[in-house]
Image (cartoon, rainbow, N blue to C red; front, side, top):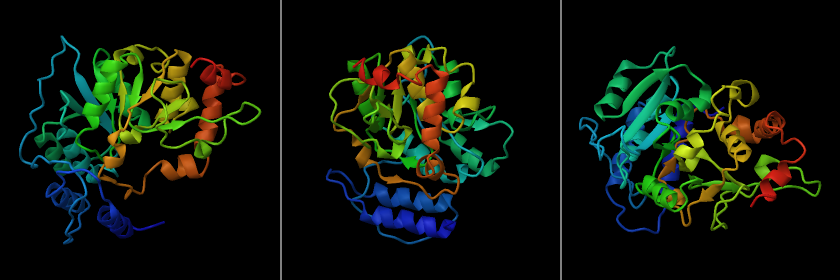
Length: 325
């Protein structure tokens, strides 16, 4: 397993190699990368230019979300979670979420109430104006579960804690939501594929990062990496409330939510020309990433079969997806 120093070096190399075809990319990248290094407890001098178009709020300045959160109307809420081992890397992600062109009305970080978190880090997060709430730890499902319960009449965007998001992420999602208010909106999707026997092929053999659809579809699979918008109609579904995901699909929230959507006829829309590839960097510098276990070791395929059986799609999953376009 690679050391933290090796992973930080990889992140630096990714920063240096990343180039965008968009204007207005200047000084903020250097500030952001220095924040990454500080959060990892490392100091390096590097000149980074033409990398990301994310503007950052200084740590000591409280973020002013607009408009102020109002329970009487539909608001835009960004929800994410982290762990006691990952939280020391989270500041750059939070800064990028707070710096969106379409600013969220509320950013909520859900943390396990029985975990020990560095007090200094919690203070830095609170100083940005981001709301921290402690709840029972439900693994990756914590990211959406409590937000759906407490902000079910709002529009909720889920985000990962190891991505520095492009400044137009929430704006791109919300613009598509206004066009398709009953669909799940995602900036990064995979297209589900089936074999000749009408069985789903392995997850890693799906068409990844698919952008060939111009309307909501059942065969698109939203991934949390790029940010996913869930409209109130999705949060009103009952299938996610019983916590059966802890037995059926405990470590793959994207898969559980996809089957909830299929069960209730909710389609997924891929934002056209999405800025997912404009995201500054994927901070896979963490030892606790689920990517290797879920994808490389085939655990997602186990979860898909388990969910198909739980939701009653064991023999007709193909018809459910391809027959209701």
